[in-house]
Length: 129
Image (cartoon, rainbow, N blue to C red; front, side, top):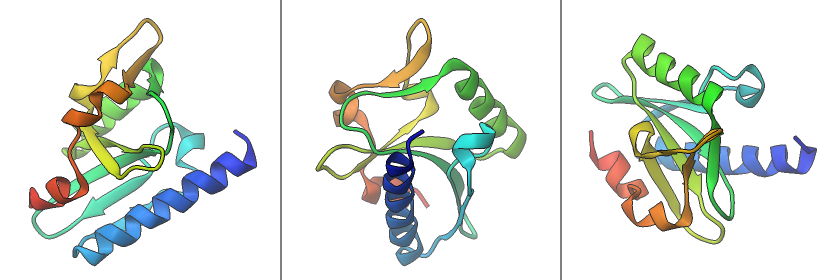
């Protein structure tokens, strides 16, 4: 991954983390999460709710390769915490998708621009406390 992509992604992860902290959550950012292939980008905790976020800031469709998707499903099972795909669409607000909402293709699981309408908004995500 080019360093500018890492910087952009890290910027958006920190932005989202700050918004979650402002809503009363504790947030752990996994450094190098894209490298190890196992840890979600953000682990989000409160006394009543726990979930994780795999963050993407892409203009068009968001892809997660099948191997990574399987690891994410295993992580959910092992921890009992759901993982949401957090998508910062180009010049738009964050949308959040449970893994079950992603569509399987031959090589990936995908959320496309047409799926943005079914994604949870930030307020909807944090309201499920």
